[in-house]
Image (tube, rainbow, N blue to C red; front, side):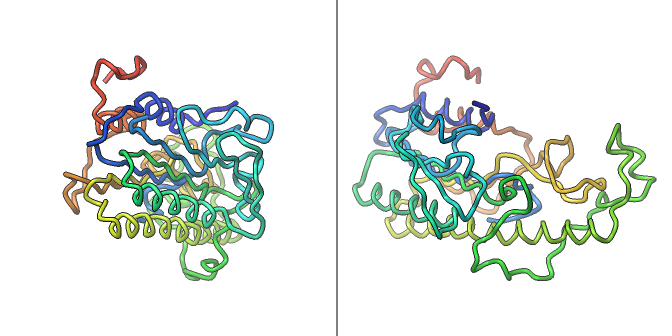
Length: 304
């Protein structure tokens, strides 16, 4: 099994800290897949919930191993993780279930909100919930992502951002290294495809925005907002046309490494923008700290 490094860190840190800490706040994390910052959008607890992508390689042959550390996990199963209109989920390691005629983002939204309403209605102990839609990742790694049908005609004039490093002249390109330096300038077909891919990504994020909206509305309706941290981020960034590169990731440029990260919760001032460098490796320790786990009980693999 190939592990997603960010999700693995969160899983290990969160699962290790499940304690009976009834006075601590709730934590809800919404993590998209392959979203750069510029694209935009809006056991650390006794009860642990997960909806969506869990690990790369969690598939129809391995689902029975379940999701250790979580008491409720509805997990996307490969090879269907990135087929947005062909949704397959496994609940707590049980036989995967197919949800025909539904879009993945909607399925995860309905399931997560239903469980959130249940937790808040029961005035449960503090909980950790992670919602991990695959959007705006490519469709099955074969082409641009697939938005919800109700969003696919939005933003008809949206184009990939024409920043200074977008399809640059040779004077800029020659400053790059290795194979990037030798890329040809993008022609009209590649430019059109880049704009199309960008539009699809923006459209796909509208479904994610609806998840966030429903989470906030549900918390407000239950008067739980003041005792809940909501964190929004992505697993990695994405480039489209930067330094003449086709849509993709895994390079050491800002588009790939500068991720969206927003926090709302107790003690977090509204409208504050921080420029302090950090990595997602810091999140597991942060969640454990929020949960109030004594330092002597922290997992040994966390050194700070």
